[in-house]
Length: 437
Ligand SMILES: [Zn+2]
Image (cartoon, rainbow, N blue to C red; front, side, top):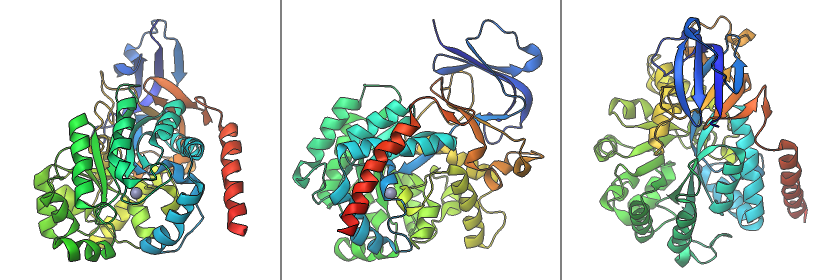
């Protein structure tokens, strides 16, 4: 018998532009939304699970467009540093010493716990030992695009960089049709850590296997010099000349784009995921997101790995995105709350190649969150702008992904969080001991 859930007495936000519908109900059958309506028309037809929302807000789950989930082990290890120093002097050495298949599994699951508890239902991950990350996100009950990292130097998961493409091919073959919630993908780290040949091969692999291609691009001012000198082009023009920018490409960051870069980017159909807090913390700069929206570029929102944020709460991310765009353009009307919500929901889904989620509509995937608005910071709840400027991940009380309740009344149901703390503790103990020796 198909699993059915009915959420009654909710205030419904179907998409960012729709008016709030009070006293509504929503029915889920299997993995999809099958009915939406006003409570006066609701009839209980033997629903298996009935949730009386008691006026809480029901909205689409949030989409975290960029994360390195397993980096939960490195959160707080190195703060207050610029990108180059942070990455080369701290993160790359820590990764070389501490990454293992087991570490990736448990630390990714810890990230999943944080994301689920703050209303994220889908994530785009990019890291090493991607099979273990995919397994962790699958076991956690999340929807995920898991992109296998490619970089031109030895890493624990692929000690010989010449075998990069082969390793990703094996990962894609294993996960392509394994479970509908997990989509494998390719993540070429960046044009400054991947040669033109590696980038080209990685993109060819993504296109050939019909999976999404990701890369970090134009994150810091220093990257401009690193790329411009040998390639004679800005990072965006470099990717464009290699034939990489197209509708199957997601670029992450895009902080340092000039007007011509923006035109090329918009014409290519590529999507961008912006990570405002990571960019602010590493002093990388502020991406021209409002200008991208003006050029009708699809923009998603991501937290980046929590070691450079240091939070995976998308509500914090939305708030910061809106405010820094206003500040950077000296215009309070820039990056309005609805546009921000769009980046974190429907546009965010499109930016990472997900279809059928990010909006509430009959026939779409049942990826839903319930928010308690009966709190001092959300009362009175006039409109959805409060989700950007006042809400917090801790206001999320129930999370449904693919038609399954993975969190209810702030308790994760899909896995044992205590076990995750215990397992991650083993790795952090090792890290502390190594640091002291
Ligand atoms: Zn990143």
